[in-house]
Length: 418
Image (cartoon, rainbow, N blue to C red):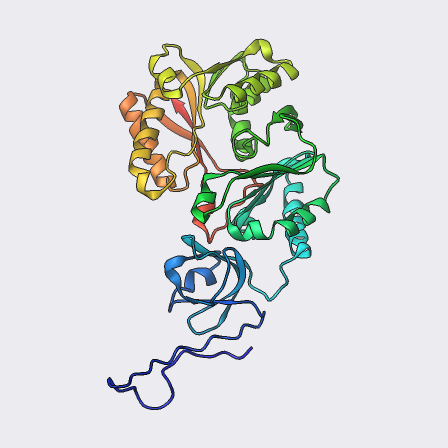
């Protein structure tokens, strides 16, 4: 395609007395899509593999682009960067889908989904995992979790919302499915000025859906549970904690529907106490423990985590802290770090000498160095001597894109406590 460089009008430098300002010509994109042109030097991060373009990096966009509309991204020299979608109302104004000139249709998504599925099938024998992990699977703004024959779709961007018919058509080609659920109620959608939308797109869905993972008969509530109903990202870390649990008593704080506690029960823990603020999640944890035959060894209690850890005098061989995201933005990072330190200090006091604390942070803005400092400060404030014996991340169904540190969000550590 012919490249047009932005340059002053041919001829001499305009005089200060000239009254006419000639607008820069609009480039003709090879794809035929509207253009979005970046400022000078603002293309370097994208060229290195990042898929986001921020609003302050854009010099000019074609007129009339609707939120989430497909566009062709160009450098300041009108060199092609790729195809993606654009939302002028969002801080993340652009998200790149492909660096080639390719149609964005159902066939495009079928290809991406097949590639993502093949990777998961290299690691998992069951059909319960995160099938599509957004940017890490070259599908920015899209998450798909699979629970056996139920598929749950999450959109975080206006562009994904607009492409949803193609996405659903592609998902259906991998069926048959009992249900395909749309779970668009994440707070991140507010940054794109999008409404909430939770519904069954295809098939039928009951309040709880049973599926098998790691030899455990699990249940999730894709319509009302947290996230899409279950947290697949701690799978590897649950196994690490469970390996230490035979014959031990375990406290699972922020347990949701059982998570770490159930994995420990399966491995042979003598007693599991799960603490969470959600009564529906605890009720489902009870059903799961009953279905698997562990009900006599598991107790699920509704309580505030901080209050319980503050007032409890019991100690446990293993304490698990898997809190929700405390740092939603960089702005509240200092307060979030204080909360993480306090939580971990309280948790350490509940560990029997020689026991273990398993702790995590799913806050993207908490760096790995921040996480280590949190652990160090918590050890000091609690008066406990700690050693990190295992450091974890999400499993292979949550791959990390090296060029996008934002995809490396989950930090996990297993501490030996003296």
